[in-house]
Length: 197
Image (cartoon, rainbow, N blue to C red; front, side, top):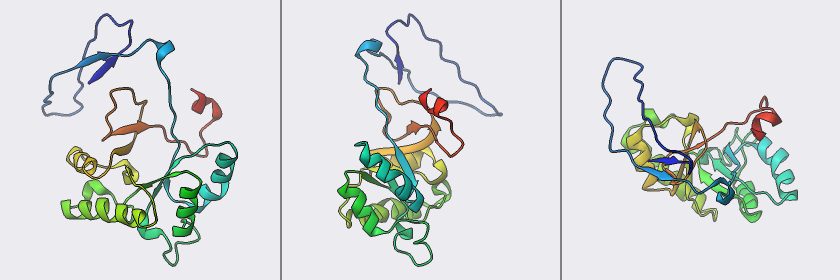
C-alpha cells in the first residue's frame, strides 16, 4: 500500500533487483494523505535491551518532562546473576510501569530470530511476553533483536503482538504496517540536527 500526498498527480513504481533472480509483486493500492495542515505527527521513543544506563540517565529526565517511552526487555537477563550490573531487573520494570512507560518484548535472550527454528521463535514470542505480563505489563509490542527477521516470522509475530518494530530507517505513514514498523536508530554519535531532521 502506498500513501500519496494530496498534490500528487501520478506515481511510478520501480523495482530494482540487486542479484540474479525474480521478483513477484501483488496488486498496488494507492491512498491519499490529508493535507499537511490536517496531519498530526507522532514520535515514539523506544529503548532496546533494558540497559541500566538507559534507566539511570534517561528515565528521570523523561519523567521530569512528562515523556514516556517503550522499553523492549530481554527477559532472561532480568535478575540473572552476572547480568544485573548491565540490565534492569524486574523491580525496575515495575517502576517503569508505575511511571506510565510501556514494556515490550525483545525475546528471551536476544538471539538472531531469523536463524531460529519455528519452535524457538514461538518460545521467544510467547514466553518472553508471559514473563513480562507476570510483572503486570500489558505487552502489545515486540522488537526484533538486531532487526533481523523474515517475513513469515514477522507475520507470526503479529499473531502475538499488536505492533512489531524493526530497525528499518523510515517514517511510518497511514495506513500503518503494524507488523513492520520503521524507525530511526539514535546512538551517542547522533547529532541534535539529525534528530530534528
